[in-house]
Length: 116
Length: 113
Image (cartoon, rainbow over all chains, first blue to last red; front, side):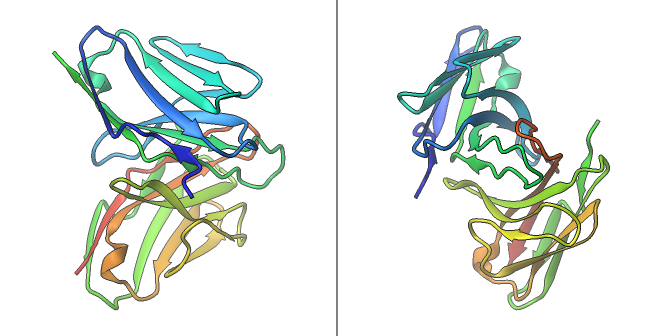
C-alpha cells in the first residue's frame, strides 16, 4: 500500500519557468512532510519541509504548499535552473517528540528535467 | 557539516555470499536507517536503529539483518545474497526530534550475480 504517491514519474520544464511537483498521501496521521533532491550516484539531500500546522513554507526559489483536506502537497521551484535537474522525492512522517527515530515514508520520485 | 559515509560505492557479489554494508556518521546522531532504492519504487526502509544495540524492522526486512555496536556505525548484512537484492542501498542518520531531517550517505550500488 503506497501511502505517499508521486503520480508523475517525470517532468520537463524550460529554464526560467516554474516547476511544480506534486505529492499525495493517504495516511491522515502524517503531520510532517519533506522534499529531498537526488542526483545520480549521490544520496538524497534535504531540500525543504513543512509541518501540518502550516500551509506554506518558502526557502529562496523553493516553496512547499500543503493542503491537508486534500492530503496533497506540492513543491514549486521558480525560476527553474538546469542545475535543478534531479529526482525529487516527497516524504512524510509523524512528528513524534520521543527518542524513537521518526520513520520517513517516501514517494516513488519525480525526475525533473530543466531544459535550456 | 554532517557527514555520512558508506564503505563502498560499488559492490559486485555472487548469489549466496554474505555481504556487509557499512555506514558511519560523524555527527553523534542517535538514529540511523538503511533504505534501498529501486526504479519506480522510491526509497523503502529496511531497518532502523534508535540507539546503540537497538534495532527495528522497517517495511522490507526480509533477507537482511543489521548491527549497531557503536553509535556512529550501522551495518547492513545480507546473510545469503540473492539477485533480487541487486539495488542501491542508502544509509541515513538523524537526531531524535519531531522536525529533524535525515542526512543520507552517497549510497552503495550492489549487484548480485
